[in-house]
Image (cartoon, rainbow, N blue to C red; front, side, top):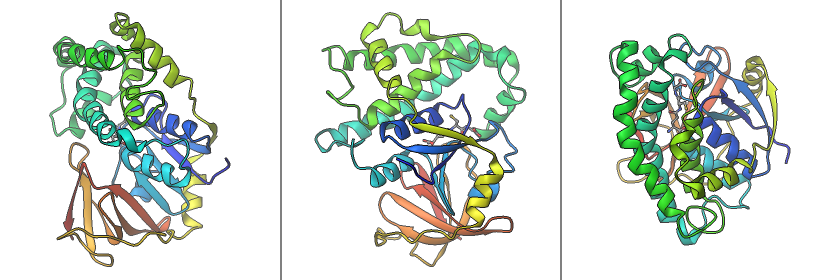
Length: 308
Ligand SMILES: N[C@@H](CCC(=O)N[C@@H](CS)C(=O)NCC(=O)O)C(=O)O
């Protein structure tokens, strides 16, 4: 299906791989803008106003941050095949949260540690800063590999155990959000220079599941220059939400000024006027001198907010 969707990403980003695969699952055509993996990000900052993480989904003057919200937005546009089958949605969300908030970090430190000498310039320093840590020595990055491998192995076993009865996907016969969230963590094992996938060899069912997930593909991708995405934002106004806001107790109300930031890392505030809020999402409209008015949408879980 042709769309105006633009994905800001870079190839070796595992969270971007989740977004690419979800676009493929929904059968969508999309345009991709390659963003740098480290700061500065001069072609992303005008759009998101400080949210630096990848991926970000754009359509016109609307930007959706975080794959948690990107999944919801894709589901709204293309309900079938669903990422959220009702029968397993609670377990699926819990597995996705575990995979991305418990399993991912030790996997990243393991694979990056093994590949310590082969990462792009400045990456180790940038990632340490992103987590509020001092720049590490290359030796410290290398040593983190084995320490984290001990945290990775038992959790990989959990994934393998989920597939032990021969099911095709983590929660049954069709892929759901749990599969996408766990898949991109497993995808990261291929490393950048040194392949770490031998860690998965004891688990043939896990490997078969990984290959089934990979076969979903990325949909129809066309690469564009960042200037095209900036122009698309400039030419549009933020879309009006078709759904009414449903603030929870104490939430900032539409029309109020607020700030939002990730709760886990890259904790840079984005400030704007609340244009939409419910239990899943908060959107801020901000003005940028280059692209004009843009709406930046965040998920609620995993994000902090304050009244500005
Ligand atoms: N919870 C976020 C996590 C995104 C994330 O951590 N992305 C990594 C790349 S895989 C990132 O942005 N790293 C820092 C950067 O690229 O500037 C999501 O689901 O999108």
